[in-house]
Structures are given as structure tokens and as C-alpha cells.
Image 1 (cartoon, chains in turn purple, blue):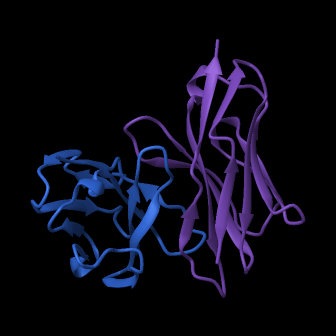
Image 2 (cartoon, chains in turn blue, cyan):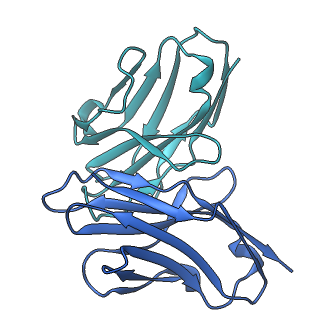
Amino acid sequence: AQSVTQLGSHVSVSEGALVLLRCNYSSSVPPYLFWYVQYPNQGLQLLLKYTSAATLVKGINGFEAEFKKSETSFHLTKPSAHMSDAAEYFCAVSEGAGGSYIPTFGRGTSLIVHP
Amino acid sequence: EAGVVQSPRYKIIEKKQPVAFWCNPISGHNTLYWYLQNLGQGPELLIRYENEEAVDDSQLPKDRFSAERLKGVDSTLKIQPAELGDSAVYLCASSLDRGADTQYFGPGTRLTVL
């Protein structure tokens, strides 16, 4: 079985500050890991994904995430927050070969950006 | 390239009424997903199709929910009869294949059951 835990339902930062959104996972087989962003009244959009290649993954809009197997973590970071980054962020895990391929999403973290 | 299309965007019905949601995935995408998203929660998978075959439907409440994907393209999700607790956003997504392939989400249908 697989699961995802996103630490903190809300994260508040000032514009220009570092963004750090935390995600821990569990998986019985090597996982695929994803970060999605959701703006109000819209569907989810992929920011980045880890598929067993480079452990540091760069995505769109300046975001990146690092896969750390020893810590079972896949935290999302951005060096400098913009007002337009305010949205809901979801971490997801999918078991790959040998697993279920069923994607499981975290509960989401709302990013608030202050001027 | 057109994205995933869903209709209607909003639906308000009274309890015990039937309701149907339609999804048109991105052309060429073999895998189609239906998710339920409650307020303040992440999406929860209801059913996954690979072409025409429903391959993961363990979370679909089969006493009232049904889904079909005719010819492996468009899909319809139906609820009959609807209950108050079914109020949520129903998201459709598609991907080229399963696993690591990127899922592309539609805007969702917001259902309100009165």
C-alpha cells in the first residue's frame, strides 16, 4: 500500500522568501512522485515529477523537488515566492513496476504569499 | 492541443435525482481517470480506464455510481440516486499510459446536492 503525508495544511510566506512545502511518502515498490498545483476553480496542473532518474527534479515556474529515499521525502522548494504562486499544492505517489499504478494524493497544502 | 474537457462545469440537483458528468480526454490518451475531490482534500480515485477497460474501480460506490468509456475515448460518470454527501468536485484526467505518465486534468464538475 502507498500513502502520502503533506505536513502543514497552510504555509504562509512573504513575497521573495523561500518556499518549502513538505511531503513524505510510503510505498512498497520504487515510487513515482509528483507535485501538482491547483488554482481556484481549476483542475490540477503538473509542476514536476520523479521517475527514478535524477533525484533533484526541476519543474515549471522555478519550482524544484529532491527525492530522498532514506527520508522517504519529496519536498517542494522555490527560492523566491511570487504573489502568483498562491494556490493549493498536492503531492502524489504512484507505485511503478510491480505495484498498483494507482495514484494517491495528499490532502494538499495551501500556499499563502504576503506582499 | 485541446486539454481535457468536462461538462457541465456546475450542477445543482435535489437528492434522489440522477446526474451525469461527461469527459473528453486529450486525443491519443489511453488512460482515463475519474476522481472525487471534497473541499479541502486531495483527489481520490474513483475509477481508472485503460482504453475501454475499467482496471481500478475499487473505490467506486457501485450501488449508486456507474461509469463507462465507449470506444476508449469519451467517458461518462453517473450517480443515481444522488445523496447529500455526493456534493463535491468530480475531476477527470487523462494520460498517455499509466504509471509515470503525466496526468492532465480537466477543470472539474462541481456538484451540489440539495
